[in-house]
Length: 339
Image (cartoon, rainbow, N blue to C red; front, side, top):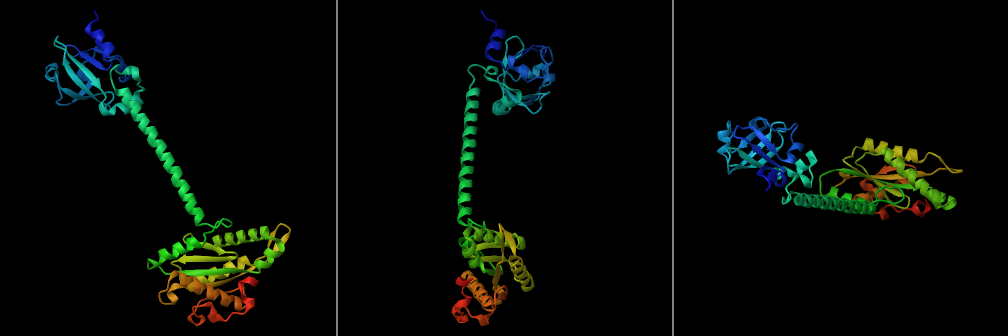
């Protein structure tokens, strides 16, 4: 018949047998992975620290805990808290049947434990498999959500972006104006139209025209702030929305520098391209409260007025310009179809 000690070695790989003298006389095979050295022959209370329900100082104290579940830890591994059921070995000694409790996941990873380090009937490994499956499922779910969110953000960005220049589009402008309309933020709108772009587009082709538009977009980025919204509103028309910028001196400098850089000739393939720009500016504090669409319309009126005065310049909207394009009585030569 198998001895009790051998039976424990087979069935309970995390047990500790304590002799009546308080010395450890046998440990389970899995214990070797936890301890720095073989504790056999060492005093139990020098290897372990019992935390609850009491801290025994003698073997008598330890035997008084028979039948109770102890919380204890190895002195060499103070961060690892174990649970142990104290059992009377009927020979004035104590047997502790140890387990990791809720710390089993960390213990398995920390000490490299496998299924062989637990009792055959222990459900620990099944729980670990479930935990791993749960973690894998959560990771897969997180990855899927990240991809879906990425796709959604990409779709939203595409819906608000001009495909050629990478600037925002009119839909983005409408959303920004609606948001500004719900706040007390003053802002300026610069409405810019390219001069002589139609001739370049018609004579050199749309591919060259597209490169011109990309260059204009790059110039706009180089002169504006991070908070400014840059919009290609259609064709060769652009809008710059400047939240919080209402200083006329700064706006004059911005408009003049844009016109100056855009009007510089630049080489493209075998051609030297020369275009220009006209800009109309509307500042919200220059008039009583108006809707965002009305602000853009008045910047448009100022743009037409600038074109009527000879192009290659900028003008601020003023009340004498009126609130509709009809008030300007523009001749056909000033229409954008001719630019």
